[in-house]
Amino acid sequence: MQIDVLTLFPEVFPAYLNSSIVGRILSKGLIKINIHNIRDFASGKHRITDEPPFGGGGGMVLKPDPIFAAVEHLTNLKQGTIDSNLETNVISEPVVLLTPQGQRFNHKIARRMAGEKRLILICGRYEGVDERVRQHLVNEEISIGDYVLTGGELAALVVIDAVSRLLPGALGAEDAVDLDSYSEGLLEGPHYTRPAYYRGWPVPDALRSGHAANIERWRREESLRRTWQRRPDLLIEADLDEDDKAFLAELAEERIDEIVDGPEVA
Image (tube, rainbow, N blue to C red; front, side):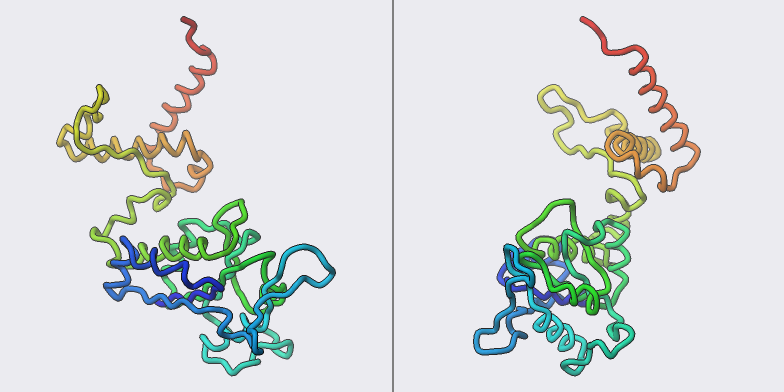
């Protein structure tokens, strides 16, 4: 897989991309990541990439011409190919704008992107990008949350990290990603490691039992419990068997009892 990132601040990326799991995935050759400076595609002596907005107002807006030129270059299109004479976008591969106004990024989107041969990520900056980039160049807009960052570089790193670890062979165990939160529509349950007792707090008996079936069921139920408590909306589309539904019914009954009985009074 190949990911090309368009940014005004390429120096943001190397430290993270060369570290930890993403660095190992790169070293394995499972993914190729190219960082491109948008300024390199700007014209004129000063290579200006942003201008004040038409109509006034604060901030600066990224100009369309260097971004169009960059994408045309990366997709081997002749400069100026994409214009108003075209009825449809001639670029078939995903060109993604990272913006607070985009669709909320999630595990499902990451898994879909991991199936692509190539992604082009455009990092927004300042007040955003010229609207013609949205309308006629990108074919997807992504947000990593309901807040505003200084630029799209951090969002691009989030997307790269989430997508790259889903590639076949990226992690040590083949089924590792299947155990992550959201992989089956549920949040991942709690984890414990040594010591078995710490400051009076024990590791749950099921995890120390050595009984594989009991451990697996405990983990499933704790995953269901955590999802029920923190993200019950995920349960609507989760793949649940009869045992799962029975356990959730128990949780619901416990909650009803708590509401009816009220808090204990000392």
